[in-house]
Image (cartoon, rainbow, N blue to C red):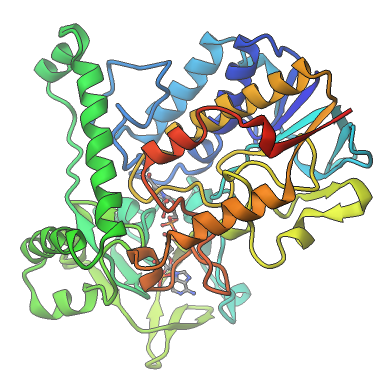
Length: 480
Ligand code: NAP
């Protein structure tokens, strides 16, 4: 069985390890970038770090006991992933600088043929798309962008050549990325103008280096690491609990966040402007003890006016003000709802996945799509978590797809395809769990144009792990 994995981030590496350790050895990983890392190779902005503690934001089978902090910085996470890939001997499977633009399967029984942007092709029986939800940076279409005299870049493509010391910098967007880099660059720029469209709910995260005694305890006290991972798991599940029950337990989260934010921002006018106007947990809760204090610095300003135009000398807002800057950083997020697009996936009968998903993406357990035999999506529709660790989901998915492939082989089949009625029913079940939760209480990148939540899992991590523990062969058609 030949397996082609697209993407060498956490998902792609996890898939390769799972398959190889279970005897499925013909695995190729194609990666658009220069090497292993995925989002952790692209997002190199100052202050980049996970906001899920590393004891959980790491593979269960490759636990590390020497993390430097609660939430490790990007270089440490990247090194960890590369180290795991080396240890499990899958680093050599990666074909770098290879961007797939189309994957096509003409016959039900295969194979998949994937074509790169420079005309190379890869053929495989199984296609695993592990490109994640957050791979395509989005810069909003603000008029006049091309006219800007200075330097502009997106936070996920940080321009390290640009020395920000002494510069006048604009940051557009105040999401999870911006709140990490704003406090870092605020210390060195001459002036920082932050443009916020919507305020956010914050919870504390100081993320200081672990003291030596704690690192020693984690290393030497039996069971402490396991307990720590368990504790963090339950802590993050409690965030989902609050999101699922906004009018009861969600109020506790809101109170906690309110107290924290009031302590962080003393100035009533600044407080008014940063305050969120939506239900706690509807958008991603932001973890930072440094962002709000940075807004109070004398060299930092916060504008809540709409950015209407980019002019040669800076950013113009709806009130007619021109904010003179020499650098614009777009912290405006990703095309999360587009999933693996712009890659075109075409199944038997010339069926395009983009047509299948024209009304919003959906897949059985976020992984399998009817009409597309032997295609598996990792971190696909409705498998994002608002509080937990996506690594847990990825591990569950790779175990599940490995078992699916083993069942296919044991039945002498050449392809596996989810039944259309099964996928439709599981999608309906997922969607039925959203009403009444905080996720539905505002607009966010979790929802498509029609308001359907297409990125997030509606429940707890443990429910997803349970649901994917074993493959129900009756849910699939095995093609011979
Ligand atoms: P994001 O959460 O989508 O935030 C984008 C920001 O840009 C929002 O404040 C958004 O405002 C604003 N924005 C978008 N279009 C705009 C426009 N036309 N004018 C003004 N503002 C605009 O993106 P992100 O911060 O890159 O984070 C994306 C996701 O990546 C996170 O939710 C998280 O899942 C993940 N992430 C994780 C970590 C971590 O683990 N450490 C770090 C960074 C990111 P609105 O709120 O009004 O839409």
